[in-house]
Length: 461
Image (spheres, rainbow, N blue to C red):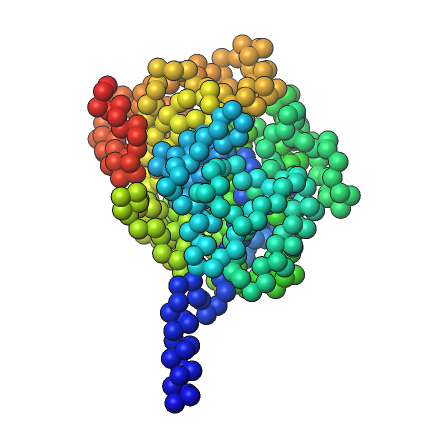
């Protein structure tokens, strides 16, 4: 009788919501404005040994794409699994910009809480309101100080006890500071200072090869090296806490390099970003070529944690992404050939709604308010790079005409096999009519599926 009762009791406990026989944790590391300037992504200049080591122990995705190329908007998609027009985090959450995610939406802390998860965020969060993102613990401080961030991570791991956790570490590097990249600030002595010779750096195709551009790139690479050190310290704290073997680790960036032609744009330099995932017990050193969107991260985390996504209903929604766990050990999985992206704002003054569909071979961009001049983020406008372009009256910024960057047509279509830098618009080329029409159709269907409020313009215009 006693043996029967114990068996029944164990069966009942295992069936309870949130119970898992094995504690499964999540560590999400988000870089701020990091493009593909990482060693394991082929950059021969970047000093990123810790990020590279993470890739060697897990899976490096070659085709990871942010759903938006702006800080708050991208983080909203990362934490809700929904594009910006669906979750409502249209632009920056801070100061006068004050964009909010829709209050009926549930971010990861809210989705995981019923399963017993303790959630924490260190440094940069940059989304609101709190009821959508109800983190149990929020650590402030300097998001550029690797030592402080690691100390906060150590405390969070210790305070969790036996509870499973979701920890978001929001680094501020390599985002621009008020001036430069905060490399002149004081950091603990154990933080290495890695400097770069501006004359030896490669200049991206979308930037002019000018002294001020090279100087800014050198500053940027130094901030990337500091970020890498922070990643290494946090991963070391995870190992010290003996949590390495039951924690899913995800490293990515919110948007591309903070220079004109990348950040805030939906060209590849703005959204094609690092994505590294390490699952305990997986085969290490995998390079996966699946085309994935960062809206796939919430389904992945929920899958890992054994938590069901929110059901659709009167105020419900269906998450458009899917879990990546099944492809972590596959280099060329079938059925992962298309991603979508969505943009409305950066700052409140920067209204320029765009929708994108990208396949391996083509990209179609719909510029919904194409009559407007393309706006600049305030930090990019003030940068020596852009001010140099204005001062000289440059016709080109790298390989793209300045006029074409500022004034765009309603539709853009690029043949990525022949034109990987997205410089020749084929939207009006009769040889590409069928491709354009098919991508246009698929994008419209996605917009309907994701409840795009901007569809009303299709009716009235």
